[in-house]
Image (cartoon, rainbow, N blue to C red):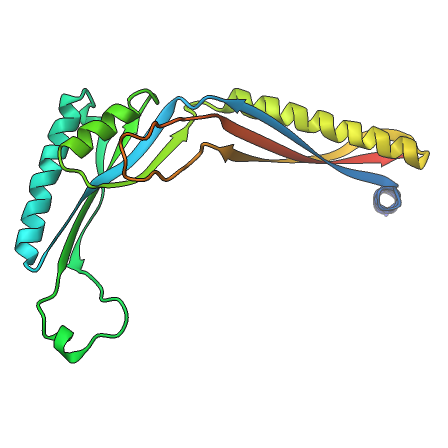
Length: 231
């Protein structure tokens, strides 16, 4: 019985100690600041979405013409040095072209116009071949350039740099705020971070192969929220 009382007393003392620490933590004065950092690098990979759209009052003719032009497009891409595993079909559709606005009874009696669309995605491990891909595709009959997206194959070093700059920015703000408020910074209680891409991550291009394609720079942003203990 005596041992049980000692154990019970120990549990009570431990509970009181934990409660005291929690109360001290809740009453602690804190300073919360946010920081931002940016790092940039030239993209080293590209994704191109292109393809063929054909129209006809016959679904069979629209689909057959589409298949012919797409086969010629893929053959031209392969001849331009693009490997087969870099080309992937991303979408295919065959349907009627929707009417714009109200349809009269006379227009409703006309044969519907069918639209066949076949889009492929070309994944490049460089940005230098983008113009060559567009030239080859358009010359072979591709009439739909939907998007060109640039990216980085490895962005970790830029993420690390952006995060470092964000933490330095948050620390600078905390020091200024503490000095202005007449308090002293203590230990860092919490850090939370986030990342984002800005710049050449994705862009749409007009159908004009004579227009130069400029990859530009990829900008990676990091943001942090830091909580300091102050006294």
